Image (cartoon, rainbow, N blue to C red; front, side, top):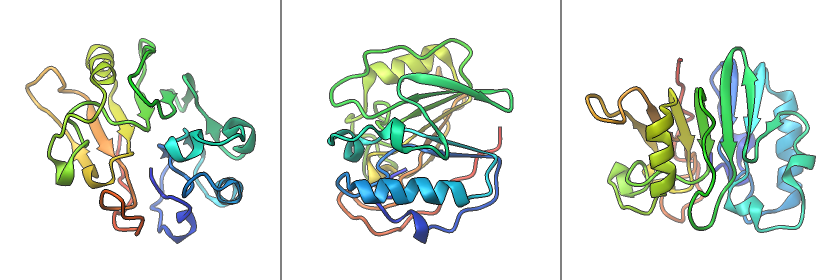
Length: 190
């Protein structure tokens, strides 16, 4: 998540499924989205799943038409290697949809409330309460998101209503408004 046009500078580990949780571009530059799509086609991952972040949502181009070397999700699901993935692009206010039953992975640009939505892993309450409620009810194995650069990290909550779901703020760029590549990609085994 949150590569902001710096995707070619990232050292990616090996894996089966690559998930990008939005903010592919820096302020929605179309040439960066096209280069990202070309880069996706060069990667050795078997499956590539992409959603749009706020930087892509503020433009006139159709992200879904420009992403041809991966699966673009926008309030939709795909199943790869028996894993059901549901993706939600950036939403400006509050999540108004629902996560389908039996979803294994939720990908959203926005964080859920009080998880990876603050500075250095601290809760700030800027994430979405309704998204958190949906994830808590549907209990996916993994929720990948970004948007809040300073909330980067992997979060688990054993012995709580959130146990069983791993939360990952995968923001590669660090700091609240810093676009330097400061965080490595996060690997999750399901």
